[in-house]
Image (cartoon, rainbow, N blue to C red; front, side, top):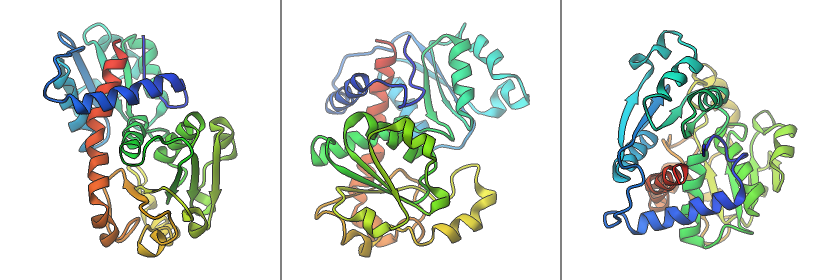
Length: 298
């Protein structure tokens, strides 16, 4: 049985297989007769609000022939304190797979252990594997193989998106630079676990020099709202804008996993100048996640 809980646990060969399938899924959308989820019902259990993740997974399940049910905390006993393992035991007897977006990584791991059905991490505080698969698909569409490319992440380098980027860098042989204030850099233990060519610096310009991709995310992730004022103050110098772009490689991509807060992590002009890439990136969530779903049941 296959789960996508973390890029750390996904072997390189399997990652490359998913990425290859995602390209095929995109090319054949609307014409493919492959329906690997036909006759199946998948549950989407979301604790956090969502646009891209929810829409892309719901559409993807339908396009692969399956049925989908969406459960918010108000729709299940999880919202009233039922242990995740008990919900998992029930769901595992009734549905064919689960897609979970929540806070604690351990909740997804416990669910997969007890439900005994394919389980996909749609986002936790620790990782965002589906996002990075779509991001890599986008980079390879536009720049060719990601091997030996330089990806520079700018902003909060200790959150789920850069963490998944770190595990991808350790497997796919590209360089990852993280430009972040010291307090927002990943731990030494995490860097050691990821391996690969990863560097951290407080110097944004140094990190941007010669980069193939400049990537950012919101400064205040879901669940961190109480820290908003302090985060905005500390991260205010870590914005992707025209002056930073001058140091990247000519033709460098600008990427953002959205939603974007113009004037904070990226300025309006830079976002609009690179909107084609950013919204191709958003679209590729659909294709990459269809590939993950098909992989889970193969």
